[in-house]
Length: 117
Image (cartoon, rainbow, N blue to C red; front, side, top):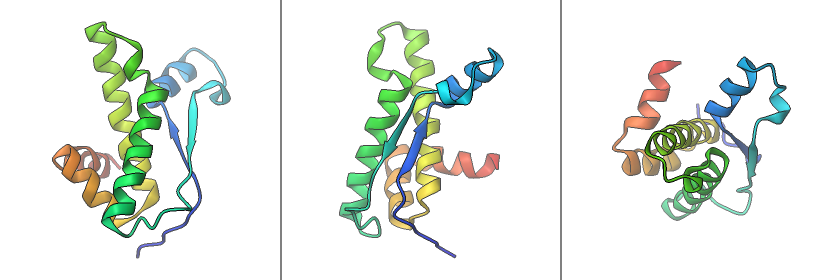
């Protein structure tokens, strides 16, 4: 059953969440970005593409992908972004968005997330 809502989704840095919780910080301190998509029809390829771009931009921002040139740090940031994107795509629950995301990742990220649950 595909229940699709137009509620904004939150991109949360998974790595930052783990670090914050293990350091005793509150979850409210974890960087988040709200991605709005009420203006999109995510059941179309065009709408799914635009939402994916918004999700990707938010994940890159929250995870700090553009903030580093250090290889180890960049690798962690990219893994964080990939996880955040997969979580957001899963939360939207749109077949068109899922198909678009799988096309971008070779089906790995969304499928891997589903296997973990």
